[in-house]
Amino acid sequence: MAVAAPVAGLALAVVTKIVAADPPSWLDNWAGGLLQVVAVLAALALVLFTGLYFHQVIVFLGSSLALGIALFSAMDAVDARVLAERGQTTPCTIVRVDMRQETHTSTNADGTTSTTTSTSYDHSLTCAQRQVTSMTTDSPAGKAGERITVAFDPQGRIKPKPADVAFDYTGALWRCFVGSVVGIGLRVFYVARRTRRRRGVNRPG
Image (tube, rainbow, N blue to C red; front, side, top):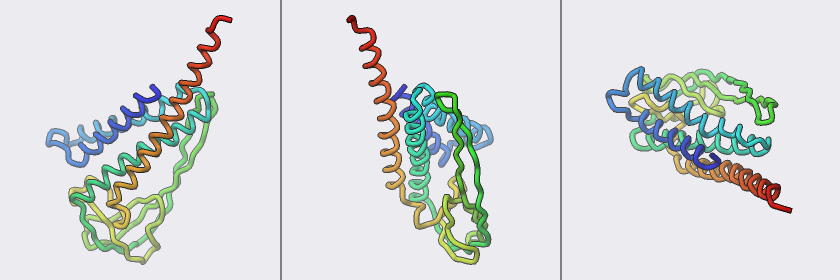
């Protein structure tokens, strides 16, 4: 579980994003969209919720954070790769920027709860390519009235991103690698340590 579950979850997330970027005709409908949501939730469960098995809080929180970063970085890498292959750019004017905060509460392995808050920024845009009207980022791409260049998917399957970061899939792959090594390493360390303790207890005196 320490290795197989997160690796399977990461693989499932990557395959899901690849298929979603260019789905076969029989998946290019509402059923395919629903299947994509279910697959991403399953990937999250494999990567994050299996951490409940590890009862040490620092291992649970540390591995979940690292593997969460790895998971979303892997999906970002797929998006960036798709944009690098078929994406286009368009000049845009920022009309409005709205900050949005979301609070998430999770239960730790010891029964306590942790609350995290994520912040994103919704940009209303006026672009030369009229199909691009909005963009959401983790940090402000500029202020109202400023002009920026936005990368977008002509097929509309990948969300628009600032052009200066949209095509950088190598950075996302590096974050995925580091997050995977740290997250899986913590879980393997926990399992190895617990195994040694059990052997010590069962060893005849």
